[in-house]
Each structure stands twice: as C-alpha cells, then as structure tokens.
Amino acid sequence: MAGAESAWRKSRAGNFIGGEWAAAGSGRCYPNHSPWSGEVLGEVAAGDADDAHRAITAAHEAFPGWSTRSPWLRQQVFLRAADILDGRRGEVLDALAAETGCGRHFGEVQVVFALKLLRQAAQLAYQPTGSLLPSDVEGTQAMAIRRPVGVVGAIAPWNASLTLSGRGIVGPLALGNTVVLKPSEEAPYTGGALWAEVLHEAGLPAGALNMVTHAPGEAGGIADAMLASPLVKRINFTGSTPTGRRLAEKAGRHLKRVVLQLSGQNPLIVTRDADLGYAVQAAAYGAFVHQGQVCMCVRRIYVERPLAAEFTERFAARVATLPTGDPRDPATVVGPVINEWALALLDRRVNEAVELGSRVLAGGVPRPPCYPATVLTDVPDEAEIAHGETFGPVVVVEAVDSAEEAVARANASDLGLAASIITGDPRYGLKLASLLEVGIVHVNDQPVNDEPHMPFGGVKDSGWGRFGLGFAAEEFSELQWVTVRDQDREFPF
Image (cartoon, rainbow, N blue to C red):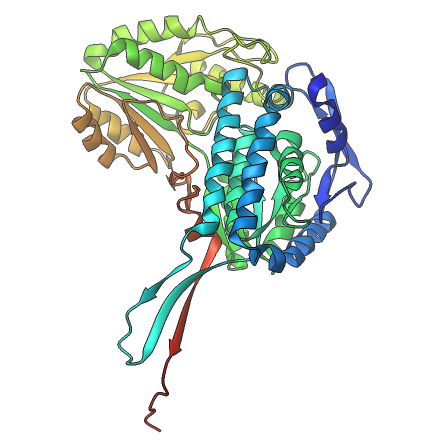
C-alpha cells in the first residue's frame, strides 16, 4: 500500500466540502480497517447531518456556475479526469485490494469501467437538450427542454466501490448537476476521497462534488439530511433491498424522486443442449468473481436434468480448485469477505441450509477472513439462502425438468435484477429471456456484466429507475415545456 500512502493521508481529513478537505464538525473520526490484514489504513472523518447540510449548501451554491459552464469546458474536466485516473492505475488497484479485499482481476474491471464512464460522460455536454414539438395553436412554437435538476445525493456501497460511486456521481455531474456523495464506511477512500481527488485535480469547480463520510452504523443521519433538504432534488442509491425500501418510504414523504439499484437473487439457467464446459466456466466466474460480492453474481443455477449430474460434478470440482487468500496475489480468485459480520452471516446461512437437508459439494468451511467458494444442492425453499441475497461466495445448484420450470422458479423470487441463460440455441435463449421477470438478461453469458451506457437496473424488489449514461437524462434532469409565439394571439374575452 506504500504507493497510496499520500492518498491515505489526505483521506484522513475525510469530508470534502466546497473544494476543501475538512474534519467532521464534531471532530470525531474512525479507523478504516483492511478486511485482509486487519491493519488500520487511515483515520476517516465521522461526519453527521450537520456536515451533510454544509455539503448540500456548497453544492447548491456551486450549481449555477457549473450548470451554465460551456460544453467544451465541462467536457475537458471528464477527459482530464480519465487521464489522471489512468495514470494512477497501479495505486488504485493497490487501494482497492487493501480497502475492500478486491483482487487484481476485478480491480482492473473497476478501473476500466471508470475510465470508460469518464470518457463517455465527456460527450454528454454535447447531447441535444430538447426537441421541437408540433402545436395545434397557430403561431406557437413548442419545445421540450431538459434542464439539470440541481443538487443530487449519491449513496454508494463498498463492494464495487470505484465503479458504483463513479456511476452515482459522473452521470449527474455531466448533465450539469452538482453532487453530494456519501460513500460506504467500508470504502471511504476508493468509493469517495479518490473520486474527489481525481475530479478536483481535473478542474471540477469547488462545490460541484462534495463528500461526507461517516462512522459505522451512522449512515442514517446523512441520508435523512439529503432526504429532508429541499435543496436536494434527486437521490440515487445502490445497496440492499431493506435499506432501499426504508429510503424510498422516506423519500415519498418528501415527494423526492430516487433511483434504486438493490439486491439480486440472480439465476443462471443451463439448457439441455448447452456446451457443458462453457457452462461450467461461465457459472464459476459468475458466481465467484470478487468472492461473490457483486449484486449481479449468480446465486442459483438451474440445470435441465439431461445435463444436471455431469454439470454438477464438473462444476463442484472446478470450484474446489479456486485459489483463496491474499487479494494482492494475482492468482487469488476468492479473497476476504468485507468484515466479520459478513463472514458470520455466510457461515450461519450455510449451516442452516445443511441442517435443513442441503448437501455441500465444495467449500462450506470458513477460512477467516475468507469464506471459500461453496456449492450447495438439495436446498429447501425455506432456507434463508434459497430466497435472501447472500452476499458472498455461495451458490445453489438445482436440477429441473425443463427450462420453463427454471424460469418459473426464478420468477417466484421477489427480486429481479439480473439473469443469464446458457443454451445451444440463442433464439430459444431470447424466448426464455422474454419470460424472465428481471431487468437484465444475458444469453450465453453469465450475469456479471456492466457498461457505462447500458440501462442498468432491476424490477420488483430489486429497485426502480436505470443507471447508465445513455439514460441518465431521464433520471437526473427535468423536462420543461416551453412555448414562444411570433405574433399576438386572439383571446375570447
């Protein structure tokens, strides 16, 4: 972590408000621990609602200047930011490993996504901001014009900290909004301070991006401040369904629009004509990338019976060989889970499933701070792991009589984020995709996919709204109807 020492020293100041690093108003801070080594990486400001209000005010004051800045000047900020981030790639990968246990492969995935996000966002300044509309009123010219909303609150998680914080702030900023970011207490640097450093160095004006960090268990005060403030016009949140539901309920009382990307119980369906070797490889990656701590990861695998026995045997054997350990080792596939609470939850849910009759085909025994890649079968529906999102390296395999049965079982879930289908007939795969009640389906791929310009989001209890630069205007701008007449109009009285 030596290469990032200066960055960690900066992050100890914590909050970034009005273009300046600042301690929490209360003077409190908390230690940021590495999930792998347990070492203290730095001290982080324990911000609260008062800090959030200062950040919101700074964002509100910066909005007129940023929103009216010329397209060329706005574009240059994002292009420079991409170059700065790319130049710090090695340092960023080290920081992701130290702070979130992110291995080299998934770290590269995050960095590449962030670079694409910034470079694609640079062109948003030149996108059309409205359209001309036909009017039946003679002499009237009508327009629908998109305008930035003002201050956007972004609440981001720890698991893909660089990617998901970037997704929460870059689109709104590129459209001319200003942002207050609340990163996770588990990733205050890679999900917060790093973005503030990069964008500030790239020339983003003071106050356009503000950040407030908080101690474990103290997120509520900052979120409530965002929800209650009339200056905050939109909020985007990525996290668990229970937390997202509470946030949405509070937002409703303030008539505040929110974008929610929540939990997933993502199925992978393997049809009887699938390439078995490919299906095994795809399932192993989709279930265990970043030790299963990705919202899109495969949680359930449904295999048609003609392939089920051989798939299960080969899949379990493959999973048992996945290297577990230090995330800094490029060979590691399964690194540490984020904290002791997450490790205990995994252990409890696997043990409960076994007590209810499930069989463990691979893994299943904690290796603190890691939990090995684990495959379960014969899991009864009443087991927590069968219906709740278990955020870790555990997957359930089930044989089904038909792909249609797999679709029905997948659709029985309250969650509907992502799904994938491995099949020898892509057209049949598209038919099955049309039947799945999810926001994202990948045919002949696994479900862990994202691109900055795609409409990312779920249905049912997996949230509402869509991230993605191609769709950001729908979420983070207001549509205004404007008319202008070139002549006086006659009125009846």
